[in-house]
Image (tube, rainbow, N blue to C red; front, side):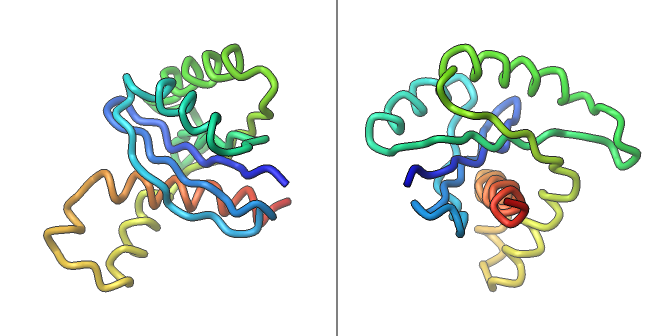
Length: 136
């Protein structure tokens, strides 16, 4: 069975998470510089069978769009055109960064490593992906 890929899109970095082949468990994979995302995805898709992209959808607490919503929508549009054979699911990403920071703290990660924003991005991607997997 193919895997699902979680994506936490950002202006500078994109957190990436991947599921197991049964699509039960999400694992943080890496962080990619935003301009390099399609090069990364091309390479990953040669190595892994992916049948679903799960992209975080930025929203304010009241459900309205954020400043990041438009750029994320633009990314999703490019993603769907380039990889039209792969299903794209949008997942509400409110609180994922806060949950990711708490998860990292709870895991006992040292203070210097916790300051690494790339770590938060890939853990956020895993939370987004796991939310999708749990809802299936």
